Amino acid sequence: MTSTLLCLFLFSSGDASIYKDKTYEIKFGIIDEGHGADNVITSETLRIPKLLRETGFVFGFIVWSEEKENFKVDVKLELPSPPEKATIDGVMDLESLNGGMDFIYSISTETGRLASMFTFDDSDPLGEWKITIKIDGRVIKEVEFTVFEPEDN
Image 1 (cartoon, rainbow, N blue to C red):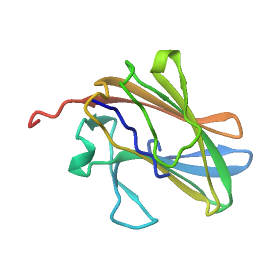
Image 2 (cartoon, helix red, strand yellow):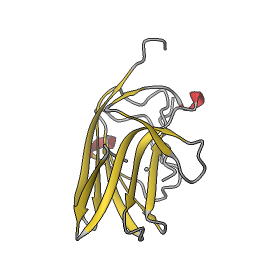
Image 3 (tube, rainbow, N blue to C red):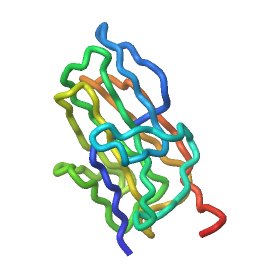
Image 4 (cartoon, rainbow, N blue to C red):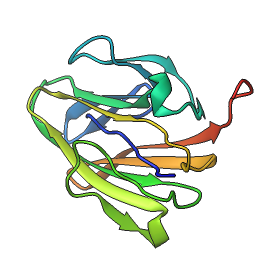
């Protein structure tokens, strides 16, 4: 079994955060990839069913700037236990911390909009997860969410 976290671009719960006189909108939840470069959050939720990659299920976060300017996001993903293997597609510098339970990576945008998307593999843990999003080294949003086994699996 391997655990893969898929990241194309992604993050948090829908509210605006003001930082350095700039407003960033951040939403977290279930993502619909069917919109090309404009992936959308179809359901803002803090309860994420563990549906495997093969089902097409994607969750994550989207961040955008009202000013539509370039920005970089630093992300820390905290898991309740380490998966057998963790990768995030599109992220070359995935750093593992805390015995493989925490992961740090950075992504940037040139369009003022950024999405980071995740999928599950068999060994991804159930339980309480946390994503912390930073812009310019400052925490803009933290999302604590529960990954659960859906009843029909």
